[in-house]
Length: 587
Image (cartoon, rainbow, N blue to C red; front, side):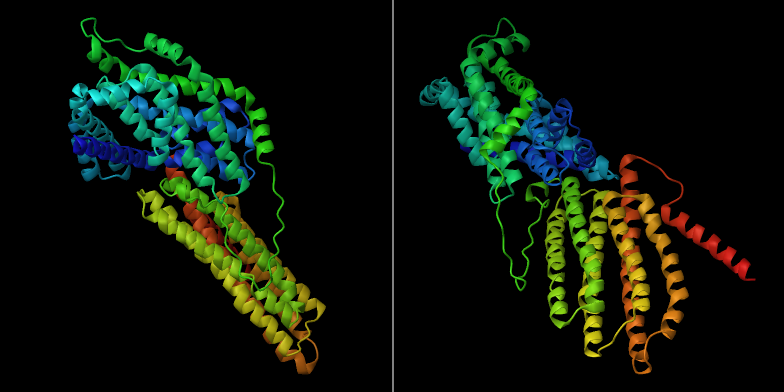
């Protein structure tokens, strides 16, 4: 009996994981768009929370996503509370699925799903196959658990134990403890419905256990918030308070809820009585009670998201901590968005990595911006201190690459694999720019100090103009990649002509005015090397813009947009046309 019970539970959970994983792969990219379009409308926020959680089957992961949006300033705590309210509705999909009595079709579903998964030529077909097979395994696991528990119908000690479950508080505590232990309200719900299908528990007892599962699932969010920023702890607290308050409201109304659910749920035939009647009706009734409880709670609390957020801010006010970091101390990388909970949802994990990469790009841009005055005018101590700034870029690089490495082990579609490779290349590119600034430009500054070279104002102004164009190219390339901005790609490509024209028109004039005869060669060498390093930075910015084109094309494929001509082809065609005009003009 124990082998059947635990083996069936293992199949049930494995099927849940397989189905959820396939759902994430199929619908994950759409979830990014849904979350990105969140507005201040509370109802749309709650609906979004429900839809996303129904796919990823984890209200705690939805909470993690919400924390990222709060940290980025894209969502207020009040909006986030609405999404968290809706997340509880999404989790009830599990109970609804397992309550359907289609266990006889489980082997057919496994066979069909396996066939589609093994022989499907397209990723999407294979994912649909995995989803159907996962659903079949859920029902097979339920059948095995149910069959294993049948002997307990005549085992009096177990029946006596089930009578004690009629006490609502005991049922809530037991279910909360079990859910917190296994970190899955789906497992608790599945076992409750299997027990109900054998007639072991009544509807009120099943409702109490479902209430407990709702509280127990908060443990996951609380554990995930340990050591995280204040926003993460607040979001987890919102989840806990909502679930606890909801249960407290309903715990004295379990009998009334049971009566209401009995009226709206299908009844067993009149000739079915006793335990058989209980077994026939309870699973669907418990699933409906679970759903109704969460929907009504959301409706009750939704108008009060503002006061709810105020209460959380009062309970967890802002902490002001002043951190003193020694200039010689190596920076510790503290990611804002790279949550491990998102790794199982590749589309959302890569979106988090993209946002972390944006922070890396901004840091590198600031470093490049500050490099010019240090290289042109800085002394040895300033150059030594500036060189350490690349350690932060290296820390970003290692953190993002390690995170993407974890993502790559998941179930990725071909488009997601392309996107991941593109992200890795983009991170490599920005890290190379940081290395040029740290190694090459700082080395040039040291040569200037060592040779006691004086750069005249006109030459410095010329180099500043070149540096400004290169800075613009890098910042625009970062925006092009992170925001999939087509005009930004075109601007990066257009800067090349401006850069070469500026260098061609000014280099000879500034060479003639390089200074005294004994400094002319040194100044010329310094200017030439400076231009060479800045050109290399631009070449990496251009490479990043080309990666942005790939990111745009991936997004267009996901959105079903078909374009006859690619961006790069248009730009190259325009460049060839301009070259022809210039040749004709020269002739």
